[in-house]
Every structure is written in structure tokens, then in C-alpha cells.
Amino acid sequence: MTIQQEFSDLGDMESITRLVVRLLVAIVLGGILGYERESVGASAGLRTHMLVSLGSALFVLIPLQAGMQVEDLSRVLQGVTAGIGFLGAGAILKQSSKNDIKGLTTAASVWLTAAVGIAAGMGREATAVVSALFALVILALVRSPVRNNGES
View 1: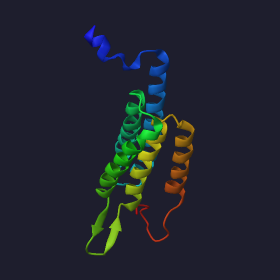
View 2: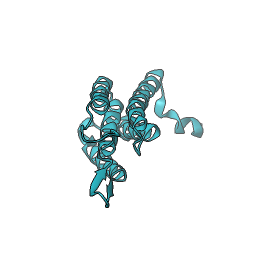
View 3: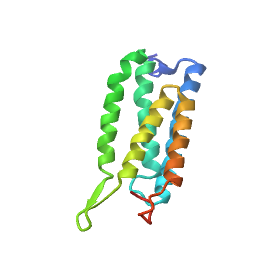
View 4: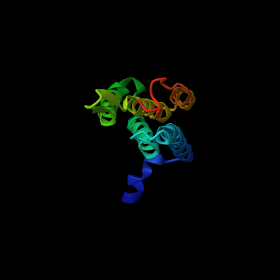
């Protein structure tokens, strides 16, 4: 009885399906963005982007499941945004010999991937997909003419 109650947060098939779809969308979209970053040798690649997107989706899914109103999610979103900022900062490196900064694009992609995960977690899957496609176009097609390796 106690074990059944502990796992009762997904009581019906509709809730289970909603959860799985939202988390899968977050994982797949994060994976697509991460694959692009990994293909150019960026420090944060496939697994990092997938985990950031999944974690961000969970951070909004759990309060929604617990009955928190969408209007009250602003504090959760602020926390996720700030936390991802610290993670992204770890991807930025300053090379002292050339006064060159690397990793800004990767940091920005991690930040955006968190937003995509949040959108998926909140049930805005279409918004998440469109945003991820825009990001993929930017990452894959818009390259700096100064850099040869594609990473900035």
C-alpha cells in the first residue's frame, strides 16, 4: 500500500503519456542540438545538451504535477535560468596568449537548450520544436567568417 502511494503521482494513462511525451521531446531536441555542438568539437556535446534539456523539463513538470499554477512558476524559471548560466560559464575559456575567448556559442546553446526543455516540460512542444529548429539553423549554417573551426 505504501509503495503504491509513493508511485501514485502518475495515476492514469493520460498522465503517464503526457509525462513521457514531454520528456522525450526535451531529450530528442536537446540531443539534436548537442549532436551539432559535438560535431564541431565543442566542450558541451550530445549528452550534456540532452541532460540540460531533460533536467529543465523536469524542473517545470514537477511543480505543475504538484498543482503549482503556471503564474507561480516564475521563481522556478529564474532558478533554472541562473543555474544554467553557471553551467554555461564553465564552457567559456579565455586563452591568455591570444586574448581570445572560446566557448560562447556552446554556452549560449546550453542556455537555449534549457529553454527548449522548459518549453517541452510545460507542454509547449510545438514551441520547443520550432525554437530548436531555429537554433539548429543558427548553429549549423551561420558560421563566423573569421574562425575556421566553427566554435566561438
